[in-house]
Length: 389
Image (cartoon, rainbow, N blue to C red; front, side, top):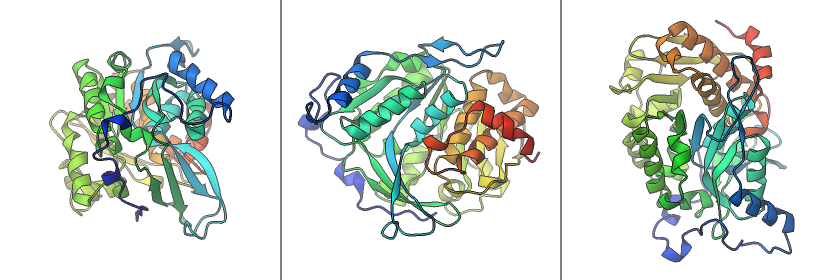
């Protein structure tokens, strides 16, 4: 897909003076307390209190509560501005709908909406958009123990152009944004070590200090025996070049147990080879990989493991906005995997989990925005009968 940026944000994230380092929790907010008393109060509350989360459904079908989320998602949380009509450029769009987003945060909310247990680790601005995003995570039962506010940088923004077919182009505002300034010393490593699955992407690998924090978080997960899930979520405008993007994405490739990529990402990572050729896809399988998933939009997905491979059909819907579809798919898959890792060795059960994940993705494209469109478990179950086997 074609992607465009207002300016290369990578350069803006380099060489920040030490005084720009984000403060620990409790730092002075950048906005006037008199101007925003409710928001600042809520931010302070989130800094000091752990939010309990829904646990995965128990054997009797009843949700429980847990302070050790099963899936911990690391990375960016931002605001997507989605045009109210499709098929126009950003300049031509008459209005935009404000929608919470950011791939790892989408996954965390998606899992929680499906009845699972999730947490988000990342940083947002100490501003109105940051407070709104924190509130949305809390409302969706996502553990926010690892969420921080930065008084020196704003919450990231992304303007999204929707083509008539629902596909997207992006323009980002990160100069730098708060998510880029997360430091290793600020990580809630115990949250990661106690998880079943650690999920991350590649965007937080682009600039320091978040790159070092990202690598430290992933290492803590691996050292603790936590299953590592990776969705590169390629966004070319955020990298200094296509070569840097390819190198950055592949730099942690062999540390992942489960990888999800799109057809476009297969082609990108293999320098333009045919993403529908199984031999091409298998070049991306590393020795310790347990499962490689390739999503194909409305056509469903392909799966590859050491024991088996195949394709699972998708649910055909009218696409309004494809933002968050891949994240909804990941949420659907991880919500199933977190309950039982043994489905990685059982092709029949894996296919059922992937049918569920495909429906999650399909339902998400029927509404504008990512988080607002993520389905509940019941919505997915109701739609499953329409899935092509």
